[in-house]
Amino acid sequence: MVKTTAIVLSSRKWGEADRIVTCYASTLGKIRGVARGARRQKSRFGAALEPFTLCRLDLFEKTGDSLFRMSHVDVLMSHHELREDLELMGAAARLVNVVGAVTPERDADPQLFEILAQGLSAVASSQDPLGTALLFQIKLLCRMGFRPQTDCCAACGRAPLAGAPHFLPTAGGLVCPACATQHHARSLPLSQGSVAVLRQAVRLVPSLLVRLRAEGRIRNEIEEAVDKYVTIVAGRRLPPADFLSGSLSGR
Image 1 (cartoon, rainbow, N blue to C red):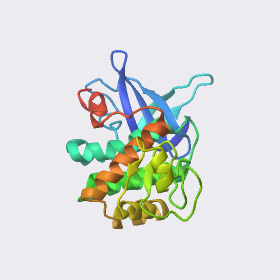
Image 2 (cartoon, rainbow, N blue to C red):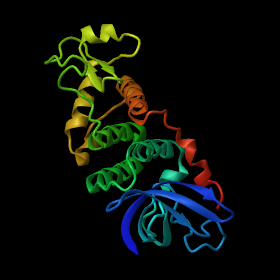
Image 3 (spheres, rainbow, N blue to C red):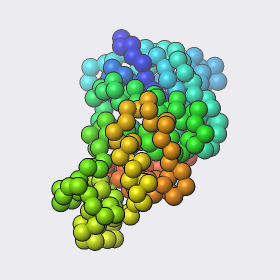
């Protein structure tokens, strides 16, 4: 038996009454487990395995089996508000999506777990959920080894960056005007405000991210840059918030 604290990333139907649940656990990393009978009306799991839930899991591990068996779940924080509002759900989905797509299975990182937990709580209480989610998405990328380059040109290495930097997703960060010209079709122009917010998001500790503001043009520019960078990192375009519909609609 294994006991761990975890955040539910997603789940899907399996068989007639079961669910396959993907979680990020503080001591195990990304794991998948089967919850027997989870879709039955009187299931002992109830709503404990819904996306975004912070919970305490009791698991059984069998040698040679990639799936854990979930035997018991205690809810520590349900985050039900993130599933009841479309804007909140879309923002929170950005965080669990990127962790689910980029992290390998069973590669524990307690700090990554903590950033994800802080991000979901911050989104739930934010007046600008999308802006908050974007900033925490950047911080998650940094922790997973994909820190956007903001100090020198990500393409040629030139520093400091003069003029109006662009963001080049395939290079992994800001590039100088000369390199942006060479990659004109794929580089994204950023305003000085967007560059400043991006640099702060990379450098600040997670608990201070909520002090940043990414609104209007700045948010739109950062959203486009982060979306395209995540697509490069993940190797595919991540699904929108409605990927959770299978988890949230029906038992």
